[in-house]
Length: 202
Length: 323
Image (cartoon, rainbow over all chains, first blue to last red):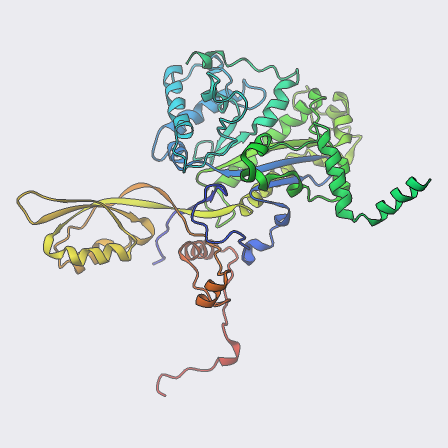
């Protein structure tokens, strides 16, 4: 009889979280040590260049707050599923991020606008009203960024930047656009995003 | 003339690194080239918090690429949009692949976010007209993708297969450079046990890393009801052991999945400080709990595992039982 299988999962902790990390400079042991480009990556930030050197993308990984990951995990809650369906439905309509900029974009679905809004506000409350010891990545919510804390649609700023959830479209992981890159693009005239008017009503 | 020669001398004295530093100092003065990240704008306010994301930290590219890849070129949005459509599709696919199978042991990820911080096009690519882009097949928005490819080398840059695997690898590397942890599933169960056997029950739980979160006595009896959180990895054979150790007094519990919890132990921990080195020695360290889990899963999946098969080759001999 083979040993029983236990489905583990992999995660990272934020470097700023001050979590119990016994040593600062962890040198990886052999199977991982020889990964290409590991020397150029720092603290989760990595920039890759395509083989022909015509394109470079900088990617950074960060830890989602535990509460948010739990809320998105569709094993234990329906919120992740709701958000995933909403993102999926919006994908065709939105040019830039694949997410809905306003709720009017959302095609008729089994999720009503009100319940989606409620779900999203609940999800954002895991970011906004957290204790000081929970580290929230500035990419998700950063009150010190100009105008975010006062903005009436601060809850919906992130929604416009989420590209998708994973694995398999719905899960506790998230691909987002950095606010600075989103800013660059929205300033360019081609990307006229619909104003988050519906969001402002909340 | 004198000044000029002094300048030349200075140039000679500067090392390569200094030159690069100068280059980046100049670059940062020009806004589009300046690298910005989440929270980077507030670097002055938050101080050391974001220091690990400074510009100098990620500029470890060879000079060739550095000159090739200029800014994110938002001044040419019509070109950027066309390339972006393709890059976005690759990002989506790569992201799904990484989240389904992570770098540690090819298990799915939990609570990891990836941020796209910057997309850069080479001067060549961004200098192209929309027609040229369409000709090389990098225009999914266009009506047709003809085979006419005037820029052979750049076609591969935007071929989906390569982009996807580039994105996937990049995400894995970025995770490896952060602090990795594993997340384990937990069971919840309630156990009924007689007061007399409670002392025998607790060692069973603690040996299996169980946690009692509630303890109630049933009124008028000597029975206790415990609500216990138990890691799935240590739950096999739990009820048998429970019954045996409590002489049948503890009820065989029903285990329900409760939630996922991160194990806050660095799987790659090694003794580094003088004190730790003295206590534990340099080389022989028992792999800690998450590392044991990782190695087991990797072994099961047939992935590479660092394992010493022969620990001390000199001492090998046939061991006899009847000495």
